[in-house]
Structure formats: structure tokens, C-alpha cells
Image (cartoon, rainbow, N blue to C red; front, side):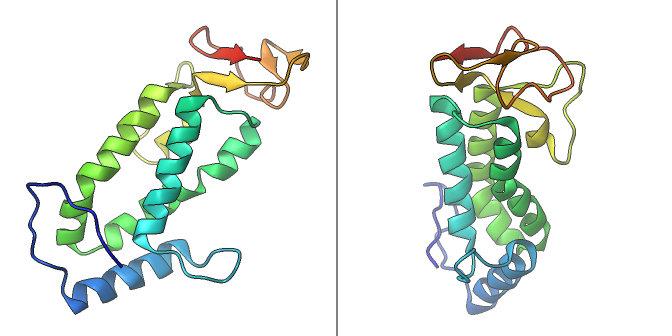
Length: 159
């Protein structure tokens, strides 16, 4: 398993014990992929980054699908406290940067404060991409109307 570190981070390679602890943490918090392969810390970060990029570009799926897609951030939250402190320190800037990008690409649910745990589930992509002629419900495109509030003005529907 390789790890990405900022330029100023400790360049000392992880020890065998730290790698084993990372593997155990990810196995406990994330389990295995559909194909049976184990997740790695890097692959969880890659899944979170891929979703952040998709939301930044304009999310084209429905609200339940976004809820499903957010599994990778929830897995990182479960894994995080189990990681060795040095790994947390090394990877914290990357996680914080991805979280900041997601916050920028989304808007919070109306009348909800920022929850310390699971905050990512209470946000809506700023740009929702739909197919031309798609139906709307309560101001939302199809697949979003089940949200318990009208579409916030900050959310743009593109299609």
C-alpha cells in the first residue's frame, strides 16, 4: 500500500506494524468490495475523491443514489478512529481538502446545522444534471422530490 503525503509531512516510511494496523482498521470499517477484494485506505480515498469530482462537475443521479454513493465517506469515518495516529496525521490534510471541496460543491439542508458526524449526508449538490424534459416535483427534478423541503435557490438544475 502506498501513501500520499504532503511535502512537509514526515517522510519516514510506515512501519510493518502501522501497515498492519491500517489494514485491520480498513477491514473492520470498510469490509470488502462487491468482487470480494478488500478495500484499502487509498482506495477509500480514491472513491471519495471520485464522488467529490462527480458532484463538482454536476451530479446526474437521484437523491437515493447520492445517499448510496456516500458510503465511501461513511467508511472513512468508521475507519478513521481506528488508524494509527501517525497515519491520521499524514492523511488528515488530504481528507480535509476533499471534505472542503465537497462542502463547496454542495449546499446544506435548509434549517440544519453542520452535524459533526454524517454531515455529508445532509448536503445537496449545487448542480443537478438532468435529461431534457424530465419531470419536476416540488421544484425538484425526478428522484429528488422526496427531500422534505423545497429546492434551495442555490441548487441549479442543468439539463
